Structure formats: structure tokens, C-alpha cells
Length: 257
Image (cartoon, rainbow, N blue to C red):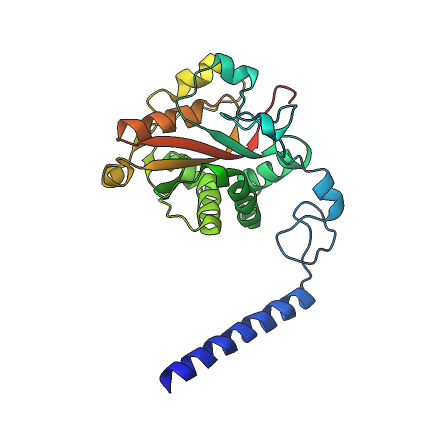
């Protein structure tokens, strides 16, 4: 009898949740993530904004996710940057190009308290990262220094990592890595300056080194420019004994931006 009631209770809860969602959508109709246009589902883009959002489809650099001309059948290929700059990680993917509405979404999440962007962005990143997944994959975000986290109140990369891991059904560890020393802004720095600024700035959390050793780590960040931050995080993972490291970002800055 209990099992029957339990099963029925689950159906009732599901029906109530659907009803609540319908009431909320009636009172507060869902709007596009980047404009005020109405949409059918929360956390989606309207048709016009979808067309202005530069998703990375087709052939892309196997190391950094930069879109490239050619057919997906030509993969794997590398962009000019990755042919000249050593990447410590294995493979990399990006969901968007950092331009137009792609840039708008990143900045809104990072500086505009638009936490509602994290879940759909995580789904887009999960789709891009799907070919990288292994049975032993552990998802982890690029960390913020504690003072920057205090000022911003959240780590946007951690929000993205959680959403991506949930979508793919993977374990994730939000504090797998630490940023023990603060670093000045990367804005305006040369490529060499960006790498120097991050040297030794990221380490594995002492409590979680046992989760890193021998595993595949998928690092998550919001934006890749030079790749310096992800390189520092990758080196920290390998220092703690990771078997392999791949990376995925919401948006990739290209040479045209």
C-alpha cells in the first residue's frame, strides 16, 4: 500500500509542479535571455537573438574551440594560435564566440548578476563538451581568489560547471582548485604578460588531491582569451596527478574581436 501511495504521491507532486510552472508563466511570462521578447520556455533565446548569438558549430580547433573554415570531417585540426602556442591541456571546446550576443551573455553573467544565464549556458557547453567525456571525468571550475569571490559574491565558472555537470550526469567539485594568491586584471596585458601574471597562481585543494589523481579533469571557465588561466589550472591538475585534462568555455575570444 505504501509503495502505491508513494508512486501516486510522486505523480501528484509532478502535476503540482507543472501547475505551478504554468501559473508562474501566466503571471510572469518567460522572456528571452537577451531581450524582452516573450519565449515559450524560460532560459531560452527568441528567434532574433538566436540568430545574433554566434554558436560554435561545424569545424573548430581541437585545442581551443575557435571556429575554423572547413568540414567537421576534417577534424581534428588546430588554429594558427594553437600551432604556435603550447597548450598543456589535451582538447578544448567553446560553446560561443565572444562577439555580439555571445559577449552580451558572458558580461551579463559575469558582472550583471544574471545568474539565470548559467543553466542554459551550461547546457550549450555540455553539448560542445560531449565528445570529451570519459567514464572517469570530473568537472571542475577555474577558481577565483577569495577576495574577488567576496566582492563578486559568486564564481560564474562554478555556476557553469555545476550546470554542465548536471546536464551530462557527471560528478563535479566546485573547490577542486584554489587561487591562493591574488592576481591583477588580465585586461590590457600582452599574451606573455597574461601567462606571467598567472604563473603559480592556481593549485589543487589539499583536501581533494585524491579526487584528481589518475582521473580525467574537465576544466570549465567563462571565457578563453590567451588561455593563460586555463593553462595554470591545467598545470595544477597535472601536478596533483591527473591522468588527462580537457577544457570547455562558454565563449572563445577570436582574433577578430
